[in-house]
Image (cartoon, rainbow, N blue to C red; front, side, top):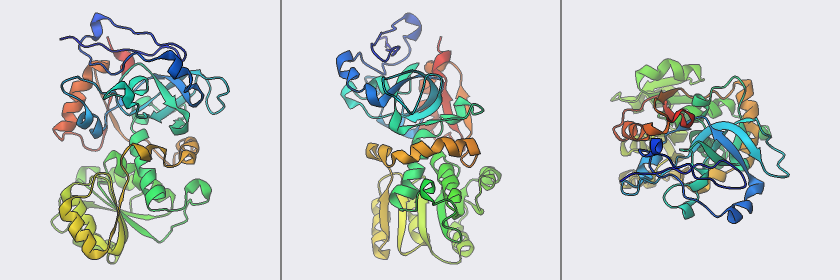
Length: 352
């Protein structure tokens, strides 16, 4: 069986580009009703996708039978804007999060990342500096939005763009999995807010995380990791963001939290951890799911300044060759647990 891909070339009409070189690429979009699309034009701009990053969620929600999926995070150049658009103009370099459009099937239709042209919702799109490379910028949308949602949506820290920069000096937070994409962005925003960050990772990433502002990095596999964290923090902590959220990290988070502390997870709460958390009266907070994409539009409006100032730096990236044909390799790397301290990226424009 051969598969096809549909590309979006115009903000006002859809053209299918179906040719044999793309036969190994699974369907990521369907043709859509242009009249329905025209009704959405006021909140969308068209972008030429220069890099498409893989998120663990991508392979988890993909359908092995239909090969339908389309990615959730991508940067590129604005190629068309709708009438009355004021935030962005043609030629702007942007990074943006993919919004769900499940009427198109498993994938996200014309809004998916795994294609050469896509639609960006201006409410969750940010400008990036001319000096930023697209590959690294692709690491931000989902991970960065999740990080912001954890700190300013769930934990209710004062937004940096509303006077919250450096507002929490002297307060501590523990971030489990600091070298993950979510973890490293949570670390950077926490530092921006003035928090003292204790984080965990493998030793290979210690220096990198310290360069981002971590006060202390602890070996995630150390048998006494909990004791080290408690010693560094001077006792149980009030806030933990678990950027990994496996059973082991959730239990670690519960162990180091003070009674009635707050635990933010990126995956659902494990039953074993739930029992332990309830025994300590810990508040369990989730920063996952499509509703979290829109946690704060002002967050996205403020990002361009943070990127320009260098207070938020893009994560490291690893580019797979072959353009969109590398989708399966990217999925396999995540499925096999071979991704550490980097964001796996493919470049749609290099597809042959």
